[in-house]
Image (cartoon, rainbow over all chains, first blue to last red; front, side, top):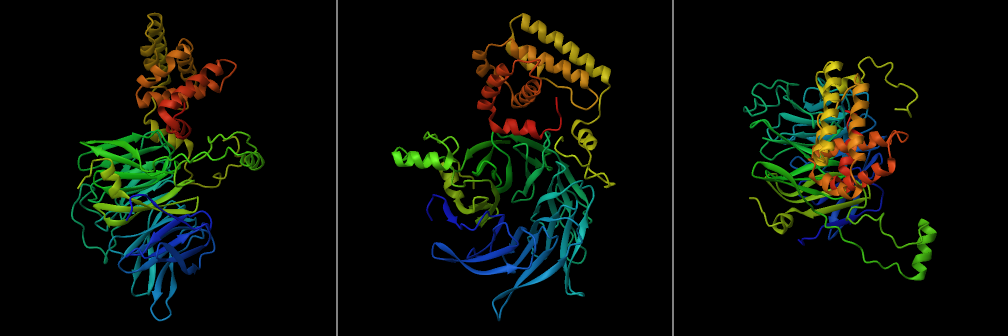
Length: 373
Length: 155
Protein backbone atom coordinates (compact mmCIF):
# COMPACT_ATOMS: atom_id res chain seq x y z
CA UNK A 1 0.00 0.00 0.00
CA UNK A 2 1.49 3.26 -1.07
CA UNK A 3 1.66 6.23 1.25
CA UNK A 4 -0.12 8.63 -1.03
CA UNK A 5 -3.92 8.83 -0.88
CA UNK A 6 -5.85 6.58 -3.28
CA UNK A 7 -8.42 8.60 -5.19
CA UNK A 8 -11.53 6.92 -6.56
CA UNK A 9 -13.45 9.13 -8.89
CA UNK A 10 -16.97 7.98 -9.75
CA UNK A 11 -18.17 10.92 -11.83
CA UNK A 12 -21.79 10.16 -10.99
CA UNK A 13 -22.49 13.27 -8.95
CA UNK A 14 -21.89 14.42 -5.39
CA UNK A 15 -21.49 11.65 -2.82
CA UNK A 16 -23.82 12.17 0.14
CA UNK A 17 -22.71 9.14 2.14
CA UNK A 18 -20.77 5.90 1.81
CA UNK A 19 -20.16 2.64 3.67
CA UNK A 20 -17.85 -0.36 3.16
CA UNK A 21 -18.68 -3.99 3.93
CA UNK A 22 -16.81 -6.03 6.59
CA UNK A 23 -13.84 -7.16 4.46
CA UNK A 24 -13.79 -3.87 2.48
CA UNK A 25 -14.37 -5.58 -0.89
CA UNK A 26 -17.75 -3.95 -1.40
CA UNK A 27 -18.86 -0.37 -1.18
CA UNK A 28 -22.29 1.28 -0.90
CA UNK A 29 -22.53 4.86 -2.14
CA UNK A 30 -25.37 7.31 -2.54
CA UNK A 31 -24.83 9.95 -5.22
CA UNK A 32 -27.28 12.35 -3.60
CA UNK A 33 -30.26 10.54 -5.13
CA UNK A 34 -32.89 8.13 -3.84
CA UNK A 35 -30.76 5.17 -5.04
CA UNK A 36 -27.87 3.46 -3.27
CA UNK A 37 -25.29 1.89 -5.59
CA UNK A 38 -23.25 -1.16 -4.58
CA UNK A 39 -19.75 -1.54 -6.03
CA UNK A 40 -17.39 -4.50 -5.85
CA UNK A 41 -13.64 -4.13 -5.88
CA UNK A 42 -12.01 -5.43 -9.05
CA UNK A 43 -8.31 -4.77 -9.16
CA UNK A 44 -7.72 -1.13 -8.49
CA UNK A 45 -11.16 0.03 -9.53
CA UNK A 46 -14.75 -0.47 -8.42
CA UNK A 47 -17.40 -2.21 -10.55
CA UNK A 48 -21.06 -1.57 -10.05
CA UNK A 49 -22.91 -4.76 -9.04
CA UNK A 50 -26.37 -3.73 -7.89
CA UNK A 51 -28.58 -0.86 -6.79
CA UNK A 52 -30.86 -0.51 -3.79
CA UNK A 53 -34.02 1.19 -5.03
CA UNK A 54 -36.78 1.60 -2.48
CA UNK A 55 -36.50 5.11 -1.07
CA UNK A 56 -38.30 7.88 -2.93
CA UNK A 57 -36.31 10.86 -1.61
CA UNK A 58 -32.52 11.38 -1.36
CA UNK A 59 -30.76 8.87 0.88
CA UNK A 60 -29.06 10.68 3.76
CA UNK A 61 -27.03 7.93 5.40
CA UNK A 62 -25.86 4.33 4.92
CA UNK A 63 -24.29 1.89 7.35
CA UNK A 64 -23.06 -1.64 6.60
CA UNK A 65 -22.91 -4.08 9.52
CA UNK A 66 -19.53 -5.82 9.12
CA UNK A 67 -20.32 -9.12 10.90
CA UNK A 68 -23.96 -9.75 9.95
CA UNK A 69 -23.54 -8.24 6.43
CA UNK A 70 -26.71 -6.16 6.61
CA UNK A 71 -27.10 -2.67 5.19
CA UNK A 72 -29.29 -0.03 6.75
CA UNK A 73 -30.24 3.10 4.79
CA UNK A 74 -32.28 6.12 5.79
CA UNK A 75 -33.66 8.93 3.71
CA UNK A 76 -35.48 12.23 3.56
CA UNK A 77 -38.63 10.20 2.81
CA UNK A 78 -38.76 9.52 6.61
CA UNK A 79 -38.11 5.81 6.17
CA UNK A 80 -35.28 3.44 6.91
CA UNK A 81 -34.73 0.03 5.32
CA UNK A 82 -32.67 -2.91 6.48
CA UNK A 83 -31.24 -4.75 3.45
CA UNK A 84 -30.28 -8.42 3.62
CA UNK A 85 -28.57 -10.40 0.86
CA UNK A 86 -30.71 -13.26 -0.41
CA UNK A 87 -28.35 -16.21 -0.76
CA UNK A 88 -30.13 -17.89 -3.68
CA UNK A 89 -30.74 -14.92 -5.96
CA UNK A 90 -27.86 -12.69 -4.76
CA UNK A 91 -30.34 -9.84 -4.52
CA UNK A 92 -30.55 -7.32 -1.69
CA UNK A 93 -34.00 -7.54 -0.05
CA UNK A 94 -35.37 -4.52 1.87
CA UNK A 95 -37.32 -4.61 5.14
CA UNK A 96 -39.12 -1.46 6.18
CA UNK A 97 -38.37 -0.09 9.64
CA UNK A 98 -41.11 1.54 11.69
CA UNK A 99 -39.44 4.82 12.60
CA UNK A 100 -42.59 6.84 13.44
CA UNK A 101 -41.02 10.19 12.54
CA UNK A 102 -42.60 13.08 10.63
CA UNK A 103 -39.44 14.74 9.33
CA UNK A 104 -36.46 13.54 7.28
CA UNK A 105 -34.16 10.89 8.70
CA UNK A 106 -30.64 12.33 8.73
CA UNK A 107 -28.17 9.76 10.01
CA UNK A 108 -28.04 6.03 10.79
CA UNK A 109 -25.49 3.78 12.52
CA UNK A 110 -25.49 0.12 13.60
CA UNK A 111 -24.58 -0.53 17.22
CA UNK A 112 -21.24 -2.37 17.76
CA UNK A 113 -23.10 -5.66 18.45
CA UNK A 114 -25.24 -5.10 15.34
CA UNK A 115 -28.45 -5.98 17.21
CA UNK A 116 -29.70 -2.37 17.19
CA UNK A 117 -29.31 0.75 15.13
CA UNK A 118 -30.10 4.37 15.77
CA UNK A 119 -31.70 6.76 13.27
CA UNK A 120 -31.36 10.51 13.80
CA UNK A 121 -34.05 12.76 12.38
CA UNK A 122 -35.42 16.23 11.90
CA UNK A 123 -38.40 15.49 14.13
CA UNK A 124 -36.27 16.23 17.21
CA UNK A 125 -35.78 12.62 18.17
CA UNK A 126 -33.56 9.60 17.72
CA UNK A 127 -35.23 6.32 16.86
CA UNK A 128 -33.40 3.40 18.45
CA UNK A 129 -34.44 0.36 16.40
CA UNK A 130 -34.29 -3.32 17.28
CA UNK A 131 -35.74 -6.49 15.82
CA UNK A 132 -38.95 -7.74 17.42
CA UNK A 133 -39.10 -11.50 16.91
CA UNK A 134 -42.82 -11.80 17.70
CA UNK A 135 -43.86 -9.45 14.95
CA UNK A 136 -40.95 -10.20 12.58
CA UNK A 137 -40.42 -6.44 12.32
CA UNK A 138 -37.85 -3.74 13.13
CA UNK A 139 -39.38 -1.32 15.62
CA UNK A 140 -38.06 1.95 17.02
CA UNK A 141 -38.12 3.52 20.47
CA UNK A 142 -37.76 7.29 20.59
CA UNK A 143 -35.20 9.30 22.52
CA UNK A 144 -36.90 12.69 22.71
CA UNK A 145 -35.96 14.72 25.73
CA UNK A 146 -34.29 17.19 25.85
CA UNK A 147 -33.58 17.40 22.08
CA UNK A 148 -34.75 20.79 20.76
CA UNK A 149 -33.87 20.56 17.08
CA UNK A 150 -32.72 18.30 14.24
CA UNK A 151 -30.24 15.60 15.20
CA UNK A 152 -27.40 15.70 12.66
CA UNK A 153 -25.11 12.85 13.65
CA UNK A 154 -24.81 9.97 16.07
CA UNK A 155 -22.13 7.58 17.30
CA UNK A 156 -22.32 4.43 19.44
CA UNK A 157 -20.22 3.86 22.52
CA UNK A 158 -18.27 0.54 22.38
CA UNK A 159 -20.48 -0.81 25.21
CA UNK A 160 -23.47 -1.02 22.79
CA UNK A 161 -25.67 1.03 25.15
CA UNK A 162 -24.56 4.66 25.13
CA UNK A 163 -25.28 6.87 22.16
CA UNK A 164 -23.81 10.29 21.35
CA UNK A 165 -25.86 12.78 19.32
CA UNK A 166 -24.84 16.05 17.68
CA UNK A 167 -27.74 18.41 17.29
CA UNK A 168 -28.75 21.63 15.50
CA UNK A 169 -29.72 23.15 18.87
CA UNK A 170 -25.94 23.63 19.39
CA UNK A 171 -25.57 20.80 21.89
CA UNK A 172 -23.86 17.44 21.85
CA UNK A 173 -25.52 14.92 24.12
CA UNK A 174 -24.87 11.41 25.39
CA UNK A 175 -27.92 9.20 25.94
CA UNK A 176 -28.57 5.69 27.11
CA UNK A 177 -30.13 3.56 24.38
CA UNK A 178 -30.59 0.55 26.66
CA UNK A 179 -33.23 -1.85 25.31
CA UNK A 180 -34.66 -4.32 27.79
CA UNK A 181 -34.39 -7.91 26.58
CA UNK A 182 -31.59 -7.14 24.13
CA UNK A 183 -28.90 -5.45 26.16
CA UNK A 184 -27.21 -6.79 29.24
CA UNK A 185 -26.71 -4.35 32.06
CA UNK A 186 -23.64 -2.31 31.10
CA UNK A 187 -20.66 -1.95 33.39
CA UNK A 188 -20.49 1.43 35.17
CA UNK A 189 -18.48 4.00 33.22
CA UNK A 190 -17.65 7.69 33.67
CA UNK A 191 -20.85 8.42 31.78
CA UNK A 192 -23.04 6.91 34.50
CA UNK A 193 -23.99 3.80 36.43
CA UNK A 194 -27.75 3.37 36.19
CA UNK A 195 -28.73 3.68 32.57
CA UNK A 196 -32.41 3.13 31.78
CA UNK A 197 -33.53 4.11 28.26
CA UNK A 198 -33.35 7.86 27.45
CA UNK A 199 -31.10 8.71 30.44
CA UNK A 200 -29.22 11.91 29.60
CA UNK A 201 -25.60 11.17 30.54
CA UNK A 202 -24.10 14.44 29.39
CA UNK A 203 -24.95 17.64 27.59
CA UNK A 204 -22.17 19.78 26.13
CA UNK A 205 -21.90 23.04 24.25
CA UNK A 206 -18.85 24.46 22.48
CA UNK A 207 -19.48 27.95 23.84
CA UNK A 208 -19.78 30.03 20.69
CA UNK A 209 -22.72 28.02 19.41
CA UNK A 210 -23.26 26.60 15.97
CA UNK A 211 -24.78 23.31 14.88
CA UNK A 212 -22.97 20.21 16.05
CA UNK A 213 -22.13 18.39 12.80
CA UNK A 214 -20.15 15.38 13.93
CA UNK A 215 -19.68 13.32 17.09
CA UNK A 216 -17.39 10.39 17.90
CA UNK A 217 -16.53 8.33 20.99
CA UNK A 218 -12.87 7.57 21.56
CA UNK A 219 -11.86 3.89 21.09
CA UNK A 220 -12.09 3.29 24.86
CA UNK A 221 -15.36 5.21 25.10
CA UNK A 222 -13.87 7.39 27.85
CA UNK A 223 -13.92 10.58 25.77
CA UNK A 224 -16.17 12.20 23.24
CA UNK A 225 -15.25 14.59 20.45
CA UNK A 226 -17.67 16.82 18.58
CA UNK A 227 -17.29 19.37 15.79
CA UNK A 228 -19.42 22.49 15.47
CA UNK A 229 -20.26 24.95 12.75
CA UNK A 230 -18.15 27.53 14.60
CA UNK A 231 -14.97 25.79 13.32
CA UNK A 232 -14.15 24.26 16.67
CA UNK A 233 -13.63 20.74 17.83
CA UNK A 234 -14.35 19.95 21.47
CA UNK A 235 -13.02 16.96 23.40
CA UNK A 236 -14.90 15.94 26.55
CA UNK A 237 -13.68 13.42 29.13
CA UNK A 238 -16.20 12.98 31.96
CA UNK A 239 -13.78 10.74 33.90
CA UNK A 240 -11.40 13.63 34.47
CA UNK A 241 -13.98 16.39 33.99
CA UNK A 242 -11.82 17.79 31.20
CA UNK A 243 -13.46 19.85 28.42
CA UNK A 244 -11.23 21.34 25.72
CA UNK A 245 -12.43 23.43 22.81
CA UNK A 246 -9.95 24.02 20.00
CA UNK A 247 -10.63 27.00 17.74
CA UNK A 248 -9.43 26.13 14.27
CA UNK A 249 -8.48 28.88 11.83
CA UNK A 250 -10.22 26.96 9.02
CA UNK A 251 -13.75 26.39 7.75
CA UNK A 252 -16.07 24.17 9.86
CA UNK A 253 -15.67 20.40 10.14
CA UNK A 254 -18.59 18.12 9.29
CA UNK A 255 -17.30 14.70 10.25
CA UNK A 256 -14.78 13.39 12.76
CA UNK A 257 -13.12 10.09 13.76
CA UNK A 258 -10.49 8.95 16.25
CA UNK A 259 -7.36 7.29 14.82
CA UNK A 260 -6.37 6.23 18.34
CA UNK A 261 -6.71 7.64 21.84
CA UNK A 262 -4.30 10.49 21.02
CA UNK A 263 -5.19 11.45 17.45
CA UNK A 264 -8.38 12.79 15.90
CA UNK A 265 -9.05 13.47 12.23
CA UNK A 266 -11.75 15.97 11.26
CA UNK A 267 -12.83 17.01 7.77
CA UNK A 268 -15.41 19.30 6.25
CA UNK A 269 -15.76 22.54 4.35
CA UNK A 270 -11.98 22.99 4.10
CA UNK A 271 -11.83 19.99 1.68
CA UNK A 272 -8.91 18.34 3.53
CA UNK A 273 -8.71 16.04 6.56
CA UNK A 274 -7.07 17.80 9.50
CA UNK A 275 -5.20 16.05 12.27
CA UNK A 276 -5.58 17.00 15.93
CA UNK A 277 -3.23 15.50 18.50
CA UNK A 278 -2.99 15.24 22.24
CA UNK A 279 0.39 16.18 23.65
CA UNK A 280 0.46 15.60 27.37
CA UNK A 281 -3.03 16.64 28.41
CA UNK A 282 -3.42 19.34 25.80
CA UNK A 283 -5.23 18.86 22.50
CA UNK A 284 -4.09 20.99 19.58
CA UNK A 285 -4.36 21.26 15.82
CA UNK A 286 -1.43 19.40 14.32
CA UNK A 287 -1.46 19.40 10.53
CA UNK A 288 -3.50 19.16 7.39
CA UNK A 289 -3.14 15.63 6.04
CA UNK A 290 -3.52 16.81 2.47
CA UNK A 291 -0.33 18.59 1.55
CA UNK A 292 -1.41 21.44 -0.66
CA UNK A 293 0.14 20.76 -4.03
CA UNK A 294 0.23 23.64 -6.45
CA UNK A 295 -0.46 22.37 -9.90
CA UNK A 296 2.20 23.27 -12.40
CA UNK A 297 1.23 26.46 -14.12
CA UNK A 298 0.77 25.34 -17.70
CA UNK A 299 -1.60 28.04 -18.83
CA UNK A 300 0.81 30.39 -20.56
CA UNK A 301 0.09 29.50 -24.16
CA UNK A 302 -2.05 31.90 -26.08
CA UNK A 303 -4.65 29.22 -26.69
CA UNK A 304 -5.03 28.51 -22.97
CA UNK A 305 -5.34 32.18 -22.23
CA UNK A 306 -8.13 32.59 -24.74
CA UNK A 307 -9.85 29.46 -23.50
CA UNK A 308 -9.73 30.73 -19.93
CA UNK A 309 -11.12 34.08 -21.00
CA UNK A 310 -13.90 32.26 -22.76
CA UNK A 311 -14.85 29.81 -20.02
CA UNK A 312 -14.24 31.81 -16.88
CA UNK A 313 -14.18 35.38 -18.07
CA UNK A 314 -10.66 35.65 -16.62
CA UNK A 315 -7.80 37.05 -18.58
CA UNK A 316 -5.00 36.33 -16.12
CA UNK A 317 -3.49 33.02 -15.09
CA UNK A 318 -4.44 33.72 -11.48
CA UNK A 319 -5.04 30.53 -9.51
CA UNK A 320 -6.62 32.26 -6.53
CA UNK A 321 -9.85 30.33 -6.85
CA UNK A 322 -8.25 26.94 -7.29
CA UNK A 323 -8.51 24.39 -4.52
CA UNK A 324 -5.13 22.73 -4.00
CA UNK A 325 -6.38 19.65 -2.20
CA UNK A 326 -7.27 16.18 -3.47
CA UNK A 327 -10.91 16.79 -2.68
CA UNK A 328 -12.28 19.72 -4.65
CA UNK A 329 -15.34 20.32 -2.47
CA UNK A 330 -16.74 19.81 1.02
CA UNK A 331 -15.97 16.45 2.63
CA UNK A 332 -19.15 15.23 4.28
CA UNK A 333 -18.16 11.85 5.62
CA UNK A 334 -15.01 10.35 7.08
CA UNK A 335 -14.90 6.68 8.14
CA UNK A 336 -12.40 4.15 9.39
CA UNK A 337 -11.28 1.75 6.63
CA UNK A 338 -8.71 -0.63 8.06
CA UNK A 339 -7.00 -1.40 11.36
CA UNK A 340 -8.75 -1.64 14.72
CA UNK A 341 -10.74 1.09 16.49
CA UNK A 342 -7.73 1.49 18.82
CA UNK A 343 -5.35 1.91 15.90
CA UNK A 344 -6.91 2.98 12.62
CA UNK A 345 -4.51 2.34 9.72
CA UNK A 346 -6.53 3.72 6.83
CA UNK A 347 -9.62 5.88 6.60
CA UNK A 348 -11.91 6.94 3.77
CA UNK A 349 -13.46 10.31 2.96
CA UNK A 350 -16.28 11.08 0.57
CA UNK A 351 -17.15 14.52 -0.68
CA UNK A 352 -19.49 16.63 -2.73
CA UNK A 353 -16.95 16.56 -5.59
CA UNK A 354 -17.93 12.92 -6.20
CA UNK A 355 -14.59 11.48 -5.07
CA UNK A 356 -13.94 8.83 -2.47
CA UNK A 357 -10.37 8.90 -1.15
CA UNK A 358 -8.49 6.36 0.96
CA UNK A 359 -5.86 7.86 3.26
CA UNK A 360 -3.02 6.06 4.96
CA UNK A 361 -3.10 6.99 8.65
CA UNK A 362 0.09 5.06 9.45
CA UNK A 363 2.19 7.14 7.11
CA UNK A 364 0.71 10.23 8.73
CA UNK A 365 1.92 9.25 12.17
CA UNK A 366 5.32 8.15 10.83
CA UNK A 367 5.68 11.20 8.64
CA UNK A 368 5.07 13.48 11.57
CA UNK A 369 7.52 11.52 13.66
CA UNK A 370 5.20 10.80 16.54
CA UNK A 371 3.68 7.37 16.18
CA UNK A 372 1.46 6.64 19.16
CA UNK A 373 1.00 2.96 19.98
CA UNK B 1 -33.75 37.24 9.41
CA UNK B 2 -34.84 39.79 6.92
CA UNK B 3 -35.12 37.30 4.08
CA UNK B 4 -37.76 35.26 5.90
CA UNK B 5 -41.13 36.93 5.50
CA UNK B 6 -43.29 34.15 6.92
CA UNK B 7 -42.83 32.86 10.45
CA UNK B 8 -42.93 29.15 9.68
CA UNK B 9 -42.88 28.28 13.39
CA UNK B 10 -46.00 30.35 14.20
CA UNK B 11 -48.23 27.30 14.53
CA UNK B 12 -45.60 25.17 16.25
CA UNK B 13 -46.31 25.14 19.97
CA UNK B 14 -42.91 23.81 20.92
CA UNK B 15 -40.78 26.03 18.67
CA UNK B 16 -37.06 26.47 19.38
CA UNK B 17 -36.92 30.22 19.85
CA UNK B 18 -34.22 32.88 19.81
CA UNK B 19 -34.83 33.68 23.47
CA UNK B 20 -34.03 30.11 24.38
CA UNK B 21 -30.68 30.30 22.57
CA UNK B 22 -29.79 33.54 24.34
CA UNK B 23 -30.62 32.08 27.69
CA UNK B 24 -28.63 28.90 27.11
CA UNK B 25 -25.53 30.58 25.77
CA UNK B 26 -25.31 33.57 28.08
CA UNK B 27 -26.72 32.14 31.27
CA UNK B 28 -28.44 34.42 33.72
CA UNK B 29 -28.84 38.01 32.55
CA UNK B 30 -27.37 40.72 34.75
CA UNK B 31 -29.30 43.91 35.60
CA UNK B 32 -29.03 46.55 32.86
CA UNK B 33 -27.63 49.16 35.29
CA UNK B 34 -24.73 46.87 36.28
CA UNK B 35 -23.77 46.24 32.67
CA UNK B 36 -23.99 49.95 31.82
CA UNK B 37 -21.76 50.82 34.78
CA UNK B 38 -19.22 48.18 33.78
CA UNK B 39 -19.11 49.38 30.17
CA UNK B 40 -18.70 53.01 31.24
CA UNK B 41 -15.90 52.30 33.69
CA UNK B 42 -14.15 50.26 30.99
CA UNK B 43 -14.42 53.18 28.59
CA UNK B 44 -12.64 55.37 31.18
CA UNK B 45 -9.94 52.78 31.74
CA UNK B 46 -9.35 52.30 28.01
CA UNK B 47 -9.12 56.06 27.48
CA UNK B 48 -6.52 56.48 30.20
CA UNK B 49 -4.51 53.57 28.76
CA UNK B 50 -4.62 55.23 25.34
CA UNK B 51 -3.45 58.53 26.81
CA UNK B 52 -0.47 56.74 28.31
CA UNK B 53 0.28 55.27 24.89
CA UNK B 54 -0.42 51.68 25.92
CA UNK B 55 -2.30 50.68 22.77
CA UNK B 56 -2.02 46.92 23.19
CA UNK B 57 -3.32 47.16 26.76
CA UNK B 58 -6.19 49.38 25.61
CA UNK B 59 -7.11 46.98 22.80
CA UNK B 60 -7.07 43.93 25.05
CA UNK B 61 -9.04 45.69 27.82
CA UNK B 62 -11.70 46.92 25.41
CA UNK B 63 -12.31 43.35 24.21
CA UNK B 64 -12.88 41.80 27.64
CA UNK B 65 -16.30 40.49 28.63
CA UNK B 66 -18.45 42.28 26.03
CA UNK B 67 -22.14 42.87 26.85
CA UNK B 68 -24.25 40.10 25.26
CA UNK B 69 -28.02 39.80 25.26
CA UNK B 70 -31.12 41.58 24.01
CA UNK B 71 -31.73 44.17 26.78
CA UNK B 72 -28.31 45.85 26.54
CA UNK B 73 -28.73 48.05 23.46
CA UNK B 74 -27.21 51.10 25.10
CA UNK B 75 -24.29 49.23 26.63
CA UNK B 76 -23.56 47.48 23.32
CA UNK B 77 -23.46 50.77 21.43
CA UNK B 78 -21.25 52.36 24.10
CA UNK B 79 -18.83 49.42 24.09
CA UNK B 80 -18.64 49.35 20.29
CA UNK B 81 -17.75 53.04 20.45
CA UNK B 82 -14.98 52.27 22.96
CA UNK B 83 -13.49 49.59 20.73
CA UNK B 84 -13.72 51.87 17.69
CA UNK B 85 -11.84 54.61 19.55
CA UNK B 86 -9.03 52.16 20.19
CA UNK B 87 -8.97 50.86 16.61
CA UNK B 88 -8.93 54.38 15.17
CA UNK B 89 -6.03 55.45 17.38
CA UNK B 90 -3.79 52.66 16.07
CA UNK B 91 -1.69 53.05 12.94
CA UNK B 92 -2.23 50.43 10.22
CA UNK B 93 1.46 49.52 10.33
CA UNK B 94 1.11 48.46 14.01
CA UNK B 95 -1.94 46.29 13.39
CA UNK B 96 -0.29 42.92 12.49
CA UNK B 97 1.83 42.90 15.66
CA UNK B 98 -1.12 43.81 17.91
CA UNK B 99 -3.43 41.22 16.34
CA UNK B 100 -0.86 38.48 16.90
CA UNK B 101 -0.57 39.35 20.59
CA UNK B 102 -4.29 38.77 21.21
CA UNK B 103 -5.61 35.48 22.59
CA UNK B 104 -7.86 33.40 20.27
CA UNK B 105 -10.89 34.48 22.32
CA UNK B 106 -9.97 38.15 21.97
CA UNK B 107 -9.42 37.71 18.23
CA UNK B 108 -12.96 36.34 17.88
CA UNK B 109 -14.39 39.27 19.86
CA UNK B 110 -12.37 41.75 17.81
CA UNK B 111 -13.79 40.25 14.61
CA UNK B 112 -17.31 40.73 16.01
CA UNK B 113 -16.59 44.43 16.63
CA UNK B 114 -15.06 44.87 13.17
CA UNK B 115 -18.30 43.66 11.62
CA UNK B 116 -20.37 45.73 14.06
CA UNK B 117 -18.30 48.77 13.10
CA UNK B 118 -18.65 48.17 9.38
CA UNK B 119 -22.41 47.89 9.85
CA UNK B 120 -22.45 51.62 10.65
CA UNK B 121 -20.37 53.21 7.85
CA UNK B 122 -21.67 56.71 8.63
CA UNK B 123 -20.02 56.58 12.06
CA UNK B 124 -16.86 54.62 11.42
CA UNK B 125 -14.01 54.62 8.93
CA UNK B 126 -14.77 51.43 6.96
CA UNK B 127 -11.48 51.60 5.08
CA UNK B 128 -9.54 51.47 8.32
CA UNK B 129 -11.72 48.62 9.61
CA UNK B 130 -11.14 46.68 6.38
CA UNK B 131 -7.41 46.97 6.92
CA UNK B 132 -7.89 45.53 10.42
CA UNK B 133 -10.10 42.79 8.98
CA UNK B 134 -7.43 41.79 6.46
CA UNK B 135 -4.69 41.57 9.08
CA UNK B 136 -6.90 39.71 11.54
CA UNK B 137 -7.96 37.15 8.93
CA UNK B 138 -4.30 36.53 8.07
CA UNK B 139 -3.67 35.56 11.69
CA UNK B 140 -6.92 33.97 12.86
CA UNK B 141 -8.04 32.46 9.55
CA UNK B 142 -11.46 31.96 8.06
CA UNK B 143 -12.47 30.07 11.21
CA UNK B 144 -12.60 33.40 13.04
CA UNK B 145 -15.08 34.81 10.50
CA UNK B 146 -17.20 31.64 10.64
CA UNK B 147 -17.36 31.92 14.43
CA UNK B 148 -18.64 35.50 14.22
CA UNK B 149 -21.34 34.47 11.76
CA UNK B 150 -22.35 31.47 13.88
CA UNK B 151 -22.26 33.07 17.30
CA UNK B 152 -25.65 34.22 18.57
CA UNK B 153 -23.98 36.33 21.24
CA UNK B 154 -23.84 39.48 19.13
CA UNK B 155 -22.18 42.73 20.11
